[in-house]
Amino acid sequence: MNKARMDCNVSTETSAAVLLVVSAGLAMLVANSAFHSFYQGFLSIPVAIQLGSFEIAKPLQLWINDGLMAIFFFLVGLEVKREIIDGHLASIDQIILPAIGAFAGILFPALFYVWFNWDNPQAIHGWAVPTATDIAFALGVFSLFSKQVPLSLKLFLLSVAIFDDIGAIIIIATFYSQDLSTTSLFVALVGLAVLFLLNHYRVNYQAPYLLIGVIVWAAVLKSGVHATLAGFALALFIPLKVKNTQGYSMLLHLEHSVKPWVAFGIVPIFAFANAGVNLSGITLSNLLDPVTLGVITGLFFGKQLGIFSACWLAIKLGFAQLPRGASWLQLYGISILCGIGFTMSLFIGSLAFENADPQYFNQVKLGVLVSSILAALLGGCLIKYSQHPQKKEVQYETRSSVT
Image (cartoon, rainbow, N blue to C red):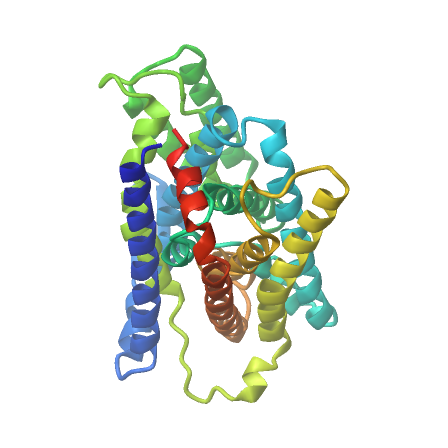
């Protein structure tokens, strides 16, 4: 990777993170203004698509959460497949440390949340909220503060976030699917079988993959399994080594085409639709609510404690190595940045409390916002502080040597 391309990626990640913050801030502003009722009413607008007897009817907010976020998970699936087959997760030596860190980074936050909510059967459904890392937000903050750090740190953060996303997929499929329809599941499985055949016979037209993917999404939506999983499943059947009709790798071409729409469109729209917290009447008791405390402590303390301690132990026992050129302080800073849960935490929260008192999701929003801000500020400052002037020349050479 040349320096120009790296600078372009850094600029894109930073811009996407800034737009994400602006969208969330705008949602907060509208939710606490005279337009609050308009905001809620707009998100509740019923939208329906009907084809014969088949109908999908949902409020606008659920179209965003179930529809647009399926494209988000499609991109996640493309990135996961590329990294595992032909990226920096293709080697077992590169997988060990981030996989261990990600596992502990899911377990510890869940335990923190459960500690505060174990006696509330309704609130306990949100145990997975603090387990997720917002990869776009975390990478954006990292890029903003990391002008002179080894590239290995960014790769470690990216790898942890990828494993974290895989964990989120498994959690959503296992714990947040309900009232399964065998007919719809059968249609979805047939669709996946067709995708397998398209991949097996190296079909190089993108349209059939995407058309079958839409059918699979609709079937999964009706099956009771969360529809976003269809996006991830579709990505796994997109071939990496097959060139499309334009002469490009089909997977890389789709990833390159979809990523700007996700970063600058879908994620900000999701943030605007889900981050609006009405702060009127918010008191210290709201911050001390068990759900809010569980989310804050899980994301801010659980993430950094789980990731850093597990990685420290793995390195000390000789199972893995510290990222090349990185210091322990920098690794700790990365562990804190993983506590930025924003998009994914809000998404899981919307699933966990979809049929519960809206106050639960409001507490989730408050906890996610507070913990993500704390993690971004502290993690970013530690990364910035860890960049000693005398190491700049060495670190620049480390970056420049990457091809």
